[in-house]
Length: 255
Image (cartoon, rainbow, N blue to C red; front, side, top):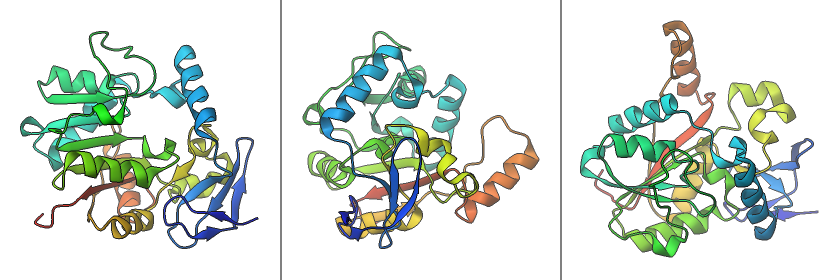
């Protein structure tokens, strides 16, 4: 049976691998690795509602306080966060927002399911239509791989927030050394909510399809690791074998 790629709309019929979770197909045109057939919106909604009740970090976000701090330090090397209005898209349990709050950043948090277990005073935006139009920088950590319609979500954000908004995306890399060595046992492919994975090539196809600017994000290294391990990992990132695919999409043509 032939299926349609969720990124570039090409026909896909090649099974890359299958595990206990699903069959994963590789799109030869855009390099996206995706679950086929896709779960329905009702199935995904039930998954996240149930996982929030049990606080399963695989679906609700298991970022530690130290990792959230590491992420923000890296983001500060790219953006001047003090002068931006941030949107944490898919805020999960709220640890990234908690770090934003501690540092005095201006931000909003979008999370359609559950509540913050870090800061009970944090109010989540539940609907995309409620996202304030003043937001100029969207942060997506480990979110886009959960979306059944990623192109439509990005398009909606551009339409709502204007042509100058920047969307930062970090997502598990299906071409990482770990993914290559583990295959069907790759940890990220064994999480029920992970339904589509993006490579560098995929990000370029997305930018081309949307007619927006693509900025690739350089190596970050690892948090709390020694110099040798960090140097090796940064080398893996440079050649495209690191654990994450990171990029920025923007409609601005002057950066």
